[in-house]
Image (tube, rainbow, N blue to C red; front, side, top):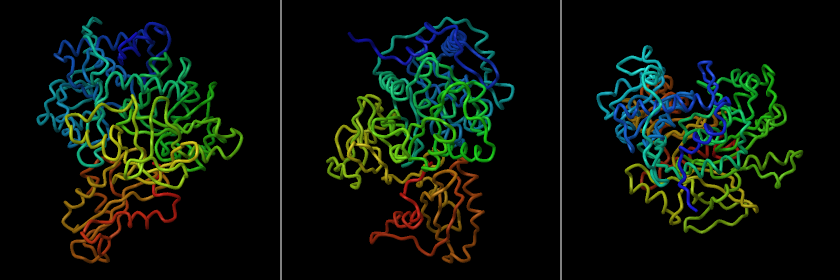
Length: 537
């Protein structure tokens, strides 16, 4: 028997079985049951339809981890429109590109971030602008609460198929302009099922939103936590003291945290020794490059939390592997840290391989390096209106597999350990940063003749952008511009997390015989005292 897999099923289930249970602890201090949450979602669906939003239209959400984001996501999907979450750390030029590229018809924005959209309104196709506080938002925005108060809960839910695109998640533009990752009802649903299994989601979980909801729909947690009837605890930002307080006050049982956030929590704990749990045991998921072993030790031995290390990319759902392989380590032994630092084994139903240039699997010798490729039901459908890029992403070394660009080794059990990256990207504090974008910005400075940007090790962020600059006057000792001025130049033109804080002036960049910059040489020198050339960000 075949039943279509639809993202709307998750809220439907929670309302049906957990309607009177608390669903959301809002940043405004309000608390909503699943019945109340569903009522607000229905009203927003009705309001969007009244204003001409139809099935297939793209509707953007620019919001931190608040109840408004949750409500908007489900309201959009209930009417068959396409949820398009936006990274609120971007700048107006970024928003202009994405809103235009996706042909976004409407946007629901938080009042603190709407100001970044206002300057580009005349240059994008977006027609409907909704703010959660129109009175605090510059420009002509409809007020969210007023809008849903003026309608009833009746709306038309169209027929939907599981192979239809329901979300578009934009990448960070690590190899040029950002690409819209198209994900279907089916891909989102099956990824959520996998999360529910591997992250052990239960109906009595209390989930703290430290992971941005815009990151691939919060790694799918907008679905899993809702569908299981668990509780969402919303936040407006990352604050170590606030995280520990929320964990204690709300009895949080589960959260996700980038290695940077874990380091932040560890530093706060060392200084203040806060309580690390309420009445529930706490488990935490972290992703990407492994946190330092000292951080894992603090989280597990000092906080008393259970850490799961997972891995993936926007294009892969994102999660495709986990280090939570308890039969492979003794829980009381320090050897578990060496396993938890690995990216781990493939999720159920996920074919994760490491292949050489010919597409052949590398040996399981924990020494030979190849590229991680993956095939699974949670992997993206395509890039939005980019057929050539889609074709390349799935057919470079091995036909039919998504190519991650991450280079790894594999041990005897098939556990992955990332060693380097194929693409020129920096992962700083969990955010992907394109070195190409940063170099293009530097080339606009009149005192810069040539430049190369690489990831440099950072204790706080894992990696941070570092620029090697050949001055226009040719003199690295008296370059005609200071490092501070370069930092300020990038700050004025880029999102805050992309700003270049480390600058080194040099006579010439290392190049090949054909003149191509050899960034690998710069990275080798910068990372010579580190275990690998991949940071912990």
